[in-house]
Image 1 (tube, rainbow, N blue to C red):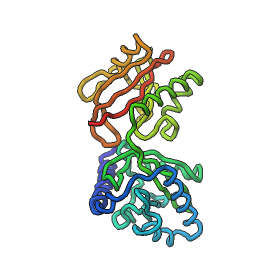
Image 2: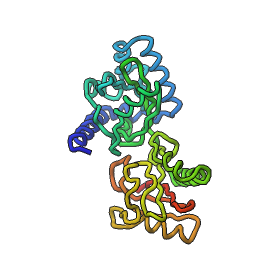
Image 3: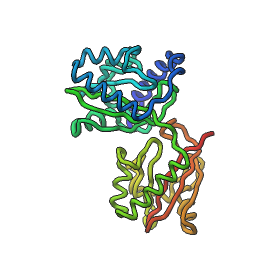
Image 4: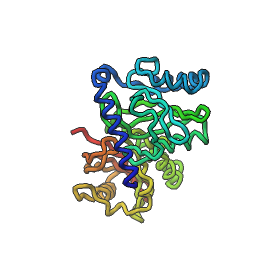
Length: 290
């Protein structure tokens, strides 16, 4: 990531933080919306914009006392150049801001993904890490995205931190998928950030037991093909090697280590569960509450 993009990303998050602090009293009264509520607002906003046109819609979406603000939900709209035209989160701070090259806390170019994605399909979902204006914390977020003319419209909901049960369940699903479809096909799906194996702050990683290299890394596919055996956490712990050693003598392994949490962008304690499937080892982990 270039230094310029990094500065822009954090500058945008800083703007959102200021907006969040300015509305603490209002935010404290809000609760998390559900995915169904987010989808309902998205459908309503999409239809409203198709019926009423851009300018009237922007005014409605930017009205923080209007019908397009509900719990922690709001509507945002950008154009094909990545310029905000509406954002119920902080219209005065964000409207007119170009966020085309802005990345989320995990380094993913979310706005470019939204623009490029809607060129291929009229509607899609995008997962990323973003500021929740109600909690003033960076959290996993899922947004429903649609294209209306030359504009990209979205409504997103904040996803909660995954639990141990969530991690173990995803690992079981991943193991079953490998058994049914083979590692090559499974690895492609594990690395698909819009697929079923990248969910909030959960993702699958896979290591080839013969090569010692990553075969899949859902949160950062760029690591595929790089050395996994020698990878160490922030405390110098070779946790992948420990996981491989533990799975050699049993069906599964549990390994604790410290790792960067893309949600908070801080190094935190993490617990991962590992299982062997053929000549591969799969792992899924969750971050531990302090």
